[in-house]
Amino acid sequence: MAAINRDDVAHLARLAHIEMSAEELDRMAGELAVIVDAVKSVSEAAGDGVPATSHPIPLSNVFREDEVGHTFTAEQALSGAPDSDADRFKVPAILDED
Amino acid sequence: MTETNSTELIRLSAAQLAAKLAAREVTAVEVTQAHLDRIAAVDGGERGVNAFLHVNTEEALAVAAEVDAIRAAGGQAAEELHELAGVPIAVKDLIVTIGQPTTAGSKILEGWHSPYDATVVKKLRAAKMPILGKTNLDEFAMGSSTEHSAFGPTRNPWDLDRIPGGSGGGSAAAVAAFEAPLALGTDTGGSIRQPGAVTGTVGVKPTYGGVSRYGAIAMASSLDQIGPVSRTVLDSALLQQVIGGHDPHDSTSLPDPLGDLVAAARLGNVDGMKIGIIKELHGEGYQAGVENRFNESLELLKEAGAEIVEVSCPNFQYALGAYYLIMPSEASSNLAKFDGVRYGLRVLPEEPPLTIERVMGATRAAGFGDEVKRRIILGTYALSAGYYDAYYGSAQKVRTLIQRDFEAAFAKADVLISPTAPTTAFKLGEKLDDPLAMYLNDVATIPANMAGVPGLSLPGGLADEDGLPVGIQLLAPAREDARLYRVGAVLESLLEAKWGGPLLAKAPELAASTAASSHGGSH
Image (cartoon, rainbow over all chains, first blue to last red; front, side):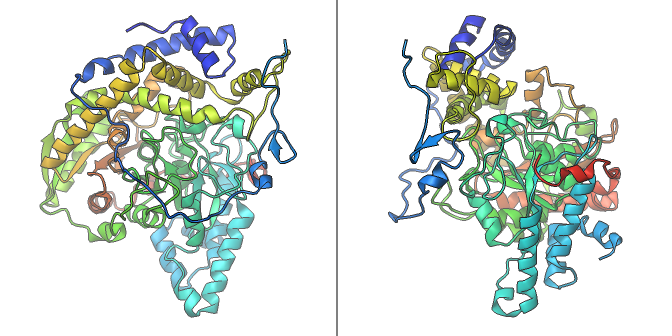
């Protein structure tokens, strides 16, 4: 399996929406390489015939009663928002104007 | 109330406090005030324990006064009071509460107030248990030392220069320092049990789904579990009985109750039970003093009539690696919601263009600490195209192998036993620059989360070489939490008979902190 390098980390940081300085990318790449190396044996541990487990105690068909319950008011929902306007979350521009 | 009374009150267990309250020998206000005074005396300042991020003085005293008024009036309302009514509790700051800030130990949520209560908090309120405040943790519960908190580390009451474990170091230290008789924790890979081990307290990770996770800020949803922190096994049983049960708000919540855990803790009998030593979870890599205390507990259980058998779980060697793929993968997805739009911090980039994407990048860069960033990047990597099968997919297969190991082990033994952590508490700062060394603290606790089985850690004595607490871990099959309390209570009473009292009686006295008065409100 390929080792993780600085370019990988820069790409992943963009995907994860975390700005990173050049120095941070260098440090993170070094630390993650050690961790990835330590966990890589996992890919050889299980054969093809072993099924995957996503939840330890699987429950299926989980339903609740179809009852009208508590809902937040707009005021409550917006109470922790950094910015809001007319009962809505207010965000900066979605698209770059340039 | 005299000062002596107050000092004695904080050393009582929750069960003892409940009995005194019911007998009206003491009021809930006196009990709550005694703990608030203790927090004021030992938690703040340069050399304070720093277990609390927020102290909830006013509300806690109001709830206590309400309990006292109901008891004084008598009649049906007094009779219907919950057994633990008036017994105060601390809540890990990963669990949301109305009326108090919830930070998850992160700058990205600093100052945020939840508009709703977690289900476990609702249950505490229904039982009229005064909530003393919110306890410190590694940011978003990511860590094993509480050093990754954005609000400074918590100190271990046994030695203020050492870590209290993590991520729930605040809850464990609060209980160990007699700042609270009970606390709530969350355990994704050992965050309740490992802090319990290194602070000489009891911590339980219930069966996955046994306690609702609604309102616990999610790290890794298939692993996270809320559970009790206390000084005695019985107290944890009492608390799990309060917070457990089905919750329609959590689709992974188990529909059936887990039985009478309090009765199990009071039963006190291991005669004829088979207790399995897990070959892979002791010996090499474990501190000598930890191993000695572990062997001593085995001898005591044998003398009490239990049969000790050895079991092998060969796939546990892959558990840590698989955990560090599954947990970051789920965390990277769960933490995507902290984007500077709906709650918490928003940071604007220094230069244009001011697009939402760049605002998210700047917000998450400023709001998250290093460990959180590492795990998000690692999880994003494990889930990315081309690596998904090799990493996340393989880790999920390992999870199946670990479950099969547990099944085989529980065919031979009723409960399994191991040390909770490979070492006693290490020094603050010692492993901060070595993430992998930090991760190894959880090697014995992670398998239970991977398989969803319940685990309990209780104090096993002090290591000979450093005089610090050692934890003994018990594991039971899924839904058999009662067995943990049954065996745990027996081992606890055998050990306490040997020590001549609780282990925490041997902990050093904490000096009253000089800057105590500055710690009344929030952090």
